[in-house]
Picture 1 (cartoon, rainbow, N blue to C red):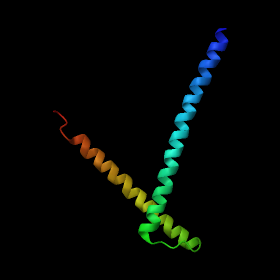
Picture 2: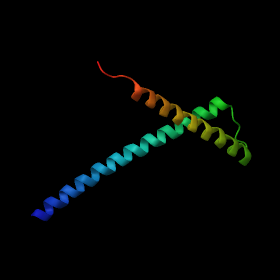
Picture 3: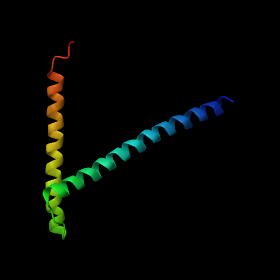
Picture 4: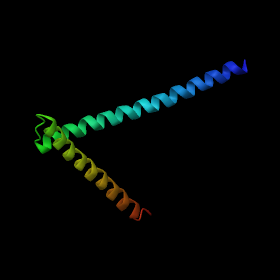
Length: 85
């Protein structure tokens, strides 16, 4: 009986972890598609061949780097604020 209860507990724990991982993967996929689409439209890139693809990827990774740098700066500034009410 104890083994059955333990197995049910393990299965429910695995389902919860799998649901969290699935939600995380979905959020990452949505961010990736949205960011690639935004950079493609904003940069007016043409992906006609391999050179165009690599040029676009350079622009995309530059944009991603700037994005995360801005997030880091905003977070650092928010932490430095006096939050006492």
